Every structure is written in structure tokens, then in C-alpha cells.
Amino acid sequence: MASPRTVTIVALSVALGLFFVFMGTIKLTPRLSKDAYNEMKRAYKSYVRALPLLKKMGINSILLRKSIGVLEVACGIVMTLVPGRPKDVANFFLLLLVLAVLFFHQLVGDPLKRYAHALVFGILLTCRLLIARKPEDRSSEKKPLSGNAEEQPSLYEKAPQGKMKVS
Image (cartoon, rainbow, N blue to C red; front, side, top):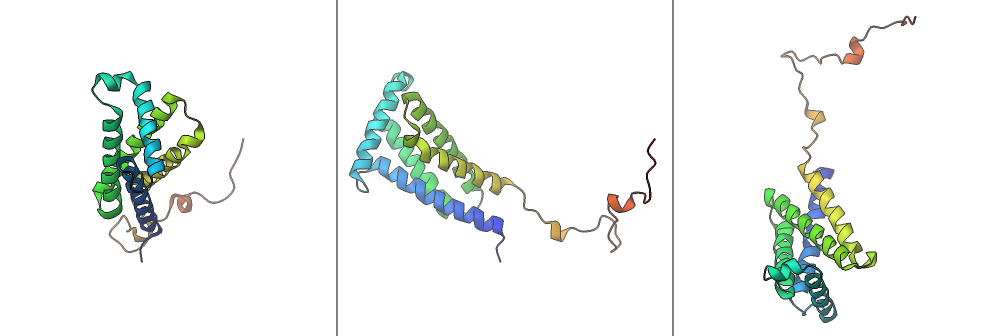
């Protein structure tokens, strides 16, 4: 049977992956929701207006929106379908992307309700990454330190018994 840690990692990976595939697709095409697509276009125009450095680098709102959308879809697919270390790399990239989006929202002065989902999914990405990178606890499989089969007494058992003299 799978450990609770494994179940948690798989559940978070699939849920987060599907969410980012969905959100990236909304940034790329109006097929899922024309209203959401138009809102994304408007939002990314305001991000580029608020950060003139992007214009100087030759990045317009369309390029920014589509590159973030493609990155979200690609990392979402990896998080959902690809096993092993690539999930952690995709998780890290998505976390950086969420931080950038939070920065954009703050830059244009959006209210909390406009970027609350980014905060929540940033926290979920952080939790998934921390759980995945934490070594699995194998306390039930510990072996004794010495070659004999007897267990070593703990420090508490070695402590002197009796009354303690306090001066």
C-alpha cells in the first residue's frame, strides 16, 4: 500500500498540473472561455504598461501572455503525467511563475480578490515541493548500530536512576 506521503504528492501533482494546464490554455486560446481569454489579454496589457522595461526588451503583452501560457501548459503536463524528478523541476518553474504573476498583480495595484488564487496555488506548490523533497521517514526499518541483534539502550535508559541532590 502506498504511504500517505506518496498519496499526497500524487494528488497534489495531478490537481496542480491540471489547474495549470487549464489556466495556460485560457491564456493561449479563447476556446475554453472567451470572457476569461479577453480578461487575460486586458490584464497582460496592463502588466506591460506598468513595467516599461519589458517594452524596452521587445516583450509585448501578447508575447508575455503566450510564453507564460505555454510554460504553464508544459509544466502542468509534466506535473500530471511525468514521474520522478522532472515533476520537482516543473513545480519549481511554476512556483517562480506564480511569484512573477503575484509581482505583476501588485505592480498594477490589483485587489486581493484578483490574485487570491495565485496565492493559494503558490502555497500549494510550495507544500508539494517541500513534501516531495523531504526524505521519507523509515523509522520502522532502523537497524541496530552494533552487529548484535539486541537493541541499544537509549540515552534515557542509561541515565542514572534515583534521587538527584540539589544544593
